[in-house]
Image 1 (tube, rainbow, N blue to C red):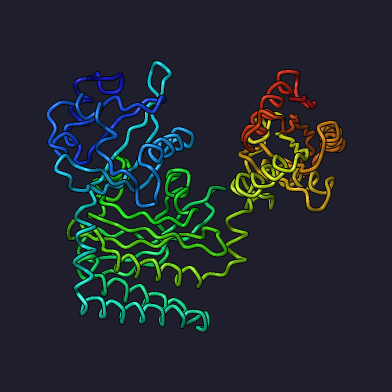
Image 2: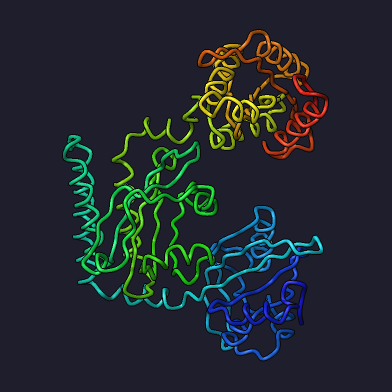
Length: 479
């Protein structure tokens, strides 16, 4: 049994060499392949047998009460729709022993245009056994409880500490977590805008003696949100990343391996459901699976650390473009998405305008990026002053901006776009003693019955903007 993904002998060898069990499913939600590790775990010699009996190897109902067949179809359908999926599952081995697994599925597009879901299954029996053993370890639980109380006390003291004391109390709380768990490092990463892009930036660290001996992460080390899009997605849902480095993607594994990390837990720091950063617990001595009690301590500490940072300051950092003062792409994709969905449910109109500055590259090349930045500030100020006070204007990227118009009909949105077009070109831009004639091109779209998300409406406006450029720029085109 083979498919396009594993027909290559080398690819099949790599999949079979994986320490995790792997299954492959097509878009019809049929299992079409699996790897050798899975066959060994289930004590089955032929792939055909496992594939034909796949649904026999799950318990009748999952812990949430759903029938396994129905639950698996829902899980995989979600994975194909969203591009990836995570979940917990309970299989049943031929010996009737239950096999709890942690499932991570990634949707992959093949050269023939078809897609498959590659599911990585992590054997969680050791974790479950550890939980059972922990129930009888009363002294260990009591000890952890005392340490957790100490973490909470330290975090509470942060709320009353003055500015000069905050850092010391914060690091003390990190030390309590690190020593109680016998880990090597505890880090706090916060959001920062770097070159108009959000990054996680390492700000605070606690290191054990072992942690000091290993290669340390330098303060100020930054990781772009864009490069950790899957992390950001999980963090925004309040989900924790608890993994062995060997189970990460190749890129992530190479990045963290250079700092001698074997296992890590990353906990999002949220304030009023807004992601302001995360804190990580790093194990450098060995691969390690943290118990439920340890994860409880780690999670509680994350909540306390997050409460230290000022929400209003972070809100502006997360959702505002540093150069122009407009909202940024993240605000658009999160908040405006909700507005659009409300319009769908209530049957109200929702329109938007996408515009960009004509020949902006020439401005940068001929006059310098400093002048280009000033042009961006002037044009956004003009547009903002020509719109209603609460209208959202967001920097979508580079010199592209989006104006969202809830409850505005397509006809009125087109009128607004023409008014903005004429306003931009009405008078020259005076920048650093230079007089520049600046124009902009506009694309207008509105929600239709086929639009299922904000991105669908944006794509329509983007196509209209492209036609405006083809028509010679400095004009408005409708989707």
